[in-house]
Structure formats: C-alpha cells, structure tokens
Length: 331
Ligand code: UFG
Image (cartoon, helix red, strand yellow):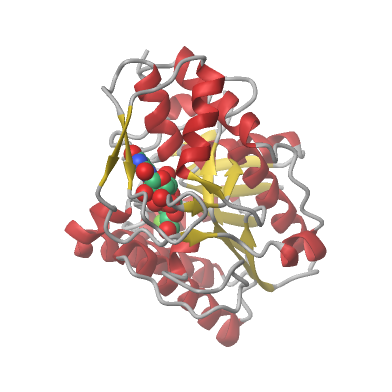
C-alpha cells in the first residue's frame, strides 16, 4: 500500500516518512525541494521532484503510485515571510492544495487525505487550552492559507465524500533520536533551533521577544511537541482513515501544557552545559501570549500518547542534531 507524501523531504515530512516505513507502508514523496532535502529521505523512497502548481505532475504521481492515501505537508511555512510575500503564499499553499484536491477528484477514487494544518488558524484567543471548535481568526497570511485549505477540504468532503483528517500542530521541535535528520531551514526563526545555533557560536546571543506578557514569568507560553510524536500522530490519523473509522476529523496536536520562552532557554542552557547570552527585546509582532492545545480529542479518539513529552527530550534531540550537523544537510 503506497502513501504519497507531499513535502516529504521537509522537517516534519521526513520524520513522518520514516514513521510510515516503520509502520509497514510503502512511501512515495512529492516535493519540489525548494526547502526540503533529498538527503532527508531514506534510500529506496521514490521521489517525484515536482511542484503542486503543476497539475500534470500531480496527476502523474497519483497514477504511477496508485496511492491509497495522501499526507499533504508541502507548503511555505514562515509567518513573517507570509506577511511580506502574501501572494506567493496564497499561490503556493492554496492553489497547490486546490490542484491536489482536484487531481484526487479526477482519479475517480476516494483517496483519504491527512492535511498538515497549524495552531496559527486560531490566532490570538482567550481560550486556554484551545479546543478544536474555538473561533478561527488567523492573524497571518500563513494561517489564512492553512485555514483556506481546511475549508476546501471540508467542501470536497461535503460535495464528494473526500475522506480527510486535519491535524493542527502546535510548536514542533526536536529531532530524530537517531540524530541523522532534523530541522534545517534556510532562514531560522524557531526558538530552540536558534538557541542551538547560539550554542554553536553561529549567533552572538538569544533575543527574548518580550518579557511583559500577562504570563507567569512575562514571556510567551507555547505547547511544544516532539517531531517524532507528531509523526506518530500522522500514522494514527492515517490508520483511522484507512479503517474508515474517521472520515472527517480535525485534531489539535499538542500536549496541553505550555513552557515559557525563559523555561525553554533555561533547559537549553542545562542541555548544552553553558549559559547562553540573552537579551530582552521588543515583543515580536503577531506573537500571542499563550498557545496551548486542548489535546483531549486526539488522545481519546486516536489513542495518541506522546513518547517524548519532556522538554528535556525535545531539547536534547534537537541539540544532538544541530551539534552533529551544524550546516544542516550541507555537509
Ligand atoms: N522567540 C524568542 N526569541 C527568538 C525566537 C522566538 O523569544 O529568537 C519566542 C517567540 O516570541 C515565541 C516563542 O519564542 O513566543 C516561540 O517562537 P517560535 O518562532 O519558535 O514559534 P511560534 O510560536 O512563533 O510559531 C509556531 C509555529 C508556526 C505557527 C505558529 C502559530 O512554528 O508555524 O506557532 O502561532 F504558525
């Protein structure tokens, strides 16, 4: 049984490809390698190096693999960049997803789809923790593009019975415990990744974006989830779809507790064994004070149980990856 993974050469995609192989599925990857890395893929995984903006290429990949299901990651993912280049984000993320849905429909087969969405669809919310039925008010173009894709998928479900599961991720971090794949973005914006770069001496210091938030220590709270656990959540969602158990489900993927920026940086200090220089800076535009998932639904319906729930495990695996691959996949 072949699972087609769009964006499978990216950070979360490549961890999910491994989890799928381990669970006994065959995997083919559709990725334009604009930000993914062929080196992140295990040997033997077929790679269609192509773009979702090219419907013929999507059609061909579906025909050649006869995919039984699709996991759709391929997207541009930076909040800040999405505000500077909104049209590029709408084109890539929304039009790319539309092409995918259209080509699925054109096969005449019902191919279940797991979609990679984000907590950014909620925007700033007072709900703590955030349930899946909280209001959807994305504040970034990135969040908008993910919400629009969710809406297209739900409409395809209503009209043609397209089976789907939407997974809304909170703050993904960590790296493969084997230490050979991890986060490798051209422009780094994520807290733990930046802290590791600082520990490697590639950056002078850490900036703490705001210490006057209405939170216990004044810095933002986020619900961090290990990428390996997130990959496992995709396998669970896929199995439930293929069993026909859940054909139209939306789940938060988070652990239901928040760590502050200070707590995360303190943990990085402990793991790397040195105190990283820090400076308090202005708040970063668009950062909600706290984003914590209500993860009850995925626990109860899919039996999701994290294997790496400790912040220390997340930081340790991220540090192992960055320390051994200071230039990512460019050795
Ligand atoms: N932060 C700092 N200093 C840094 C980098 C980050 O203080 O150098 C803070 C941020 O202000 C934020 C927290 O650390 O409070 C986490 O920031 P990240 O950039 O690591 O993650 P975000 O919470 O901004 O982003 C995540 C996902 C996005 C998603 C967003 C939804 O990575 O894909 O949540 O709000 F869109």
